[in-house]
Structures are given as C-alpha cells and as structure tokens.
Image (cartoon, rainbow, N blue to C red; front, side, top):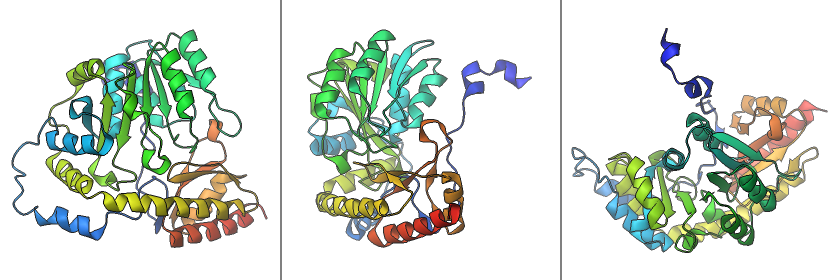
Length: 355
C-alpha cells in the first residue's frame, strides 16, 4: 500500500554504501588520521561548560563565514555553510535541476552528485575517462553542449581517482559551457590549486569545499560553498534554517583561528603520501594511480578477494561494485606506520589471492 504514494525517484534510489565495519586500521573514508592537534582540542574543550546549548544556532553561521572568508579570501556574503558538503550539493541540485534536466558528471565521481540528480528527476550524463582515469575537458564541454546541460560537476582532485584537471582546463569548461559549473574542491589543501577566487569573474561558477578532510573535522560535518551574488540569491531560498549546529560552528571557528599548524602539516603530509605511493608501486600485481588527494586508487586482479583478506586482518579500505572501478580499491593515506602496515599486508594478501 505505501509504495503507491512513494515518488518513483525514491523507489529507484539506492542508499549510500556506508556502514560501520569493525576494524583496527581504518583507511576507507579519506579521513585525516592525524586528527586535531592537542592544543586546539584543549581550546575547544575550555569553553564548553558555559556554552549556550539551549539556544538555536546562528542560522547564517555568521562568525564561521567570517573565519572562512579570512581563510579563503572570499567575502562572507559570498559564502554559505552546510551540514557537510552533501547538504550544499543537495541545495545546488534543488535550485538548478528539475525533472528531465541534464547534468554532466565526469565519471567515476563522488556518488552523491548522481544521487541527488536522480532524486530530483534529472538525467545524469556520464563522461568516461581514459584507461588512466584522466578526464578529457573537451569531452565535458561537448557533452554539456550536446545535452543542453543545466549543471556540470567537476571534482578536483577527483574522488575516487585522485586525478586533476588543470586550471586552464577548468577555465575552458566554465567559459564554454552554457551551464552552472560546480567545482568540488574537497581535497584542495592536498593539491594546492583552486578556482575559488574566480567566482566574481564567472557568474556560473560554484565552488564547494569541506573541513572534513585536511582540517580533520569529519565528525562535525562542516562544508562551505562560494559563489557570485546571483547564485547566492537563489541558493538562499532553498537553504533550511539552523542547518549547522552550534558546537560545529564554534569548533570550526576555533580551528580556523589556529590554522598555522595545518599549513606545516600539509607539507609533511605530501611527503608521506609520496613515500606511500612509491612503496605501493613496488608491489607486484598492483596498478597505482597518481593522486593529488589524501587517498590512492589501486587496481589488481581479484580485488574483492584481496579486500576480504585485508578485512580479515582488520584493515578496512573502500571497495567498489564494478563498472569503471572494477577490481579497484581506494585507500586513505595515513601516518607512516599505518601506511607501512597496509603495504606489507597488501603484499601478503595479493600473494594469497593469486600465488
């Protein structure tokens, strides 16, 4: 009886494949395994006793937007804070995508893009990569024109492949596409190149970032969006009030006020990532794709068997169901000791999977 009332898009929808699996080494979700520095944790804890939790949060995240403005160089009025970047992606789709509207997404990509488009009744147009998962920006522009697309998504660096488009390529997509272009820079800090300062130049540009990755606040769900005034006017009409809780706003402000330690850590991280990738390339039977994120995509025969063997050893990585990512797993870059443990166990598991 109930199903006759449910929208057809909801009946077809698939839940995000996320479950809490028991493990001793968690390398599946691109989290910052270094965590927050102890001195910043102490600052956050200090004021919690007298914090007015009985009050509703600031619906506009005013103070946090000011801190994000100082961090990004974008005026606060051109920023919106969300309960994770997922909420902001939902707002963009709700604003610009209706039934049968076309949305171009270079594949493979973060699954929440297509999830929200399908939920809105839109049509996803995938742009396939080459064998190295490199996206052709010209094909993205061609697809947007051929399909009269409303929105183009670009994840840069791309999750789950770690590949990037150059700033020149992104500029071409923005200028040649008669569409809203959303550039997802969730992994910006690990890459270092951004288009967030282009929002005044291009009225069709939206940039989304998160504090879940490099800033180590995944548990507080803080995402933010930057766009020009016209786009912000319409996005504000779909934003729900009180969407980001008080504690998350406060803690994020504290972290951004003391972000000097983050800058130094990023340099260390890049060296750790390079060492990790090099160690994985020495494992026979594994194809390692270049990455500008905090994760590495690996391809191997019998990936499901390897994933199962790693799980038996308490090591959780991200597996994929097939398609373009057949026989691939994605692994988060962690502190050196954890990376070394993973590389050693991966080598053993591959030997067991196909001796």
